[in-house]
Image 1 (spheres, chains in turn orange, red):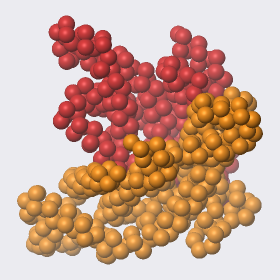
Image 2: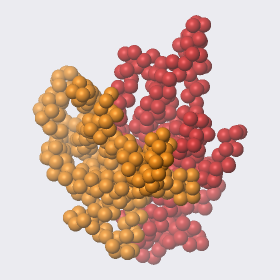
Image 3: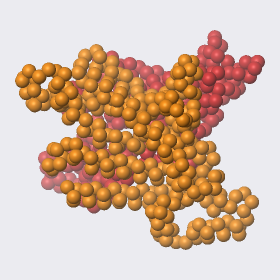
Image 4: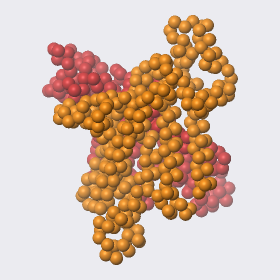
Length: 306
Length: 282
């Protein structure tokens, strides 16, 4: 067990190192010279050279990479071109709002996914099953910005049930969380359904039925707990999907999180911010997968035994 | 032929196929079908107050904020979506096949290194990576397609890798090798054909993902650049006018949804039909 944890930690650390290497390479592909960007339009050749020296851009690549790494280790993600502040402080200031939104989105996704997955599995092969699966296909095929704008039009503009945009009360969170959750709910429902059907075909479920246990008991006591495992693994993997969704959802609903930060940075071609959020997201994804891997044995004794 | 018959026998897959064919026809015949040139600001394309015209007999789907005919722009937008869908996803499947097959066949240090690299790519959120790439390279139709390919090949590579590893262990490959066949002969003649069902399924399912990603990038303003119409940038351009002219969001939105849904439905049916082990599942 200890060895397993140590190995997973080492792999995660290596992946993070690789992530840093890739972002470093991407920064070097930049057609725009960062020194010229920072020096501004008024900068002459001498100022640009000074900025370049200040940034260390005149040193050999391996040296630059090492200093890039040591900066990252200290949480230094560079400075924003336009806002003239540290990227990390911009991100940290907006992170809580995004975490609230993601938690709400995951809650919507898992709840809807479980409900529809179970309904489909109980009625497998029937009309209700087909209807639910069709709805799932629509859910995963819907572009999030269209869902967001449609929900806004129906529930905020026409019905007036929720505010158009902003942040602060629970009512503000309903539509963004719903938008964020719908896409994943489709995948979850499919997964819950197939995991449940797998379990329902197993011998021990047949034994349970033969003993005369009610179908309700079979589903909730025997089938569901076993179907939960892939769902937990999925939440870890899903963080990547969520980080992508957050950009669109926060842009449409004016939610003041890191997604909106990225959206504003896109308009101003403020690459350090985009890169910083990408790095933080990659970190979140690697950590999410790690946690999912470490939690799985606690939930499932079969994995523990391996 | 068997595949086509099976698709037609499934109502949802048939629906998907019909929509896909409709989109292909719209894209191919856009110049013939479009009632107006897509980028022309029409003389009476705006109301007296300067607002977009709602759908009526002349402008079947209304006009946009610059007084251009929405139907014509949607038809040309279908071209953009399909070209990017096919080019980007085709490239992604080709890269995925190459990486997955090479890594699965060679294994060892090279194979391992290749798969660790795909693990690495999985650590990036797709949209953010695409945003970074699109911000680095100036976006145009082909750049957007390449950006999407760079993001989407990873999943294909992983699946192909797993399948290739299974294939390499099989007796017929061993037999071929003991007969003295070279690597390229084994890969091209014996492994690749077995991977074709996977390639076809992902070639279809992946178009749905690609269409959605292109629309999202264009909606964020870093995909296909106006005036070249794309379903995503039509919504991007008219977002601020959305409450007054909702058709400018709903029609392109419906086009994106229907197209992605249909490629998903057809791809899912193909997976069922081509992979017998999946049969009876979902």
